[in-house]
Image 1 (cartoon, rainbow, N blue to C red):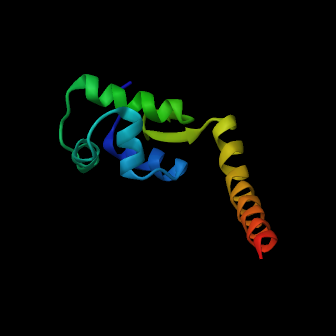
Image 2 (cartoon, rainbow, N blue to C red):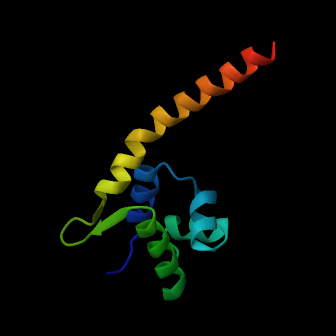
Length: 101
């Protein structure tokens, strides 16, 4: 399967990843991600590194007539739980501040 720039953008959006986070995970530069998403041709191994990073984060790529992406069940669950975790952490931080007063 050949990763398409639009699939990369869709996968980042689904995961809530910024260009910097994807670049770090794929071990490529921020400019490389930007160039790829703009449609520039990259070396095959670079495109594969980006694809592997997105798959490791929980994206499945679909191809055929209409290429797309979908989240694995594990990634979808993790993303659903993330806001709850963030709220709980904020509450714990507020409680710690109150105890110090």
